[in-house]
Image (cartoon, rainbow, N blue to C red; front, side, top):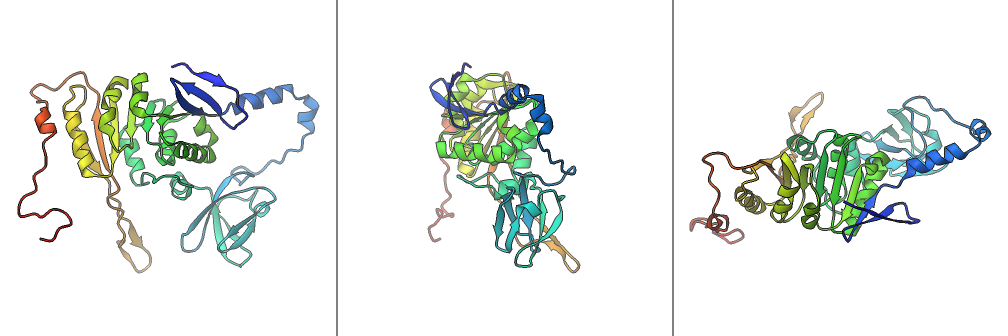
Length: 343
């Protein structure tokens, strides 16, 4: 793929890829090196440097405040500013330099614990432009799709960037994430969320504001493809062409009718193994001095996961689904009234 660079005064380098718009991370590292190399030695040695104890909070760092009921607030420390919460306000200068886990007293006399946000906390509390994939599904997706360090992964339907954050962490410093999103506002929100959590993640992300169905046709050597689309069956041709041998394609779908259609389309292709379908439920437990029981709130259905692998041909004896079977209609028994109608 060839990229053409355009000079820009914004935070991003804007690139053109086959007529689509692509956002990549700014070249901040190179600029910083050049500035340090060009600076006189006296300037560097005379500059006042504040050395904080290892692990303590620093300026411009994300923190999460937790109250006695477990309610959380995500904020960023800014030297010289004041943070306003429901429990009162806190001065950032009183937090910078303190270790995580410190108990703070607000202006209203309320106690809060200040911590570094985990990835799960950040995903739940970060700003959203679109509905995110549930945090109970993201870890399972990373395992079931076998996301490994150094892999090349394509993601379509980036939304607010929740799954992208999990993918980028699993890919490590040598992996690469190529994401497609058709809506500019979603792409901008996702890029901001990823950069806010870790600027290093954004450097390994290539985000195209384009249609993945066409974008996949221009790719090859892809290890994994993860789709959060309403019509993933329309991306099968491009996925088959882009995937490496034994590469994995995984789709996240909210409805079982979509699962059925995708599974049928996969069954008609010699290059894909039969679809595997999974659903993840999460049941918390309540444990304290007097209770030890399941919670009344269960995190049940959020979406179905459909997985298939790239292969050379069918297994001996495996029959392809005929077009008639792939387009057959589901017949509702006479004893079962259609949904929404009284029996």
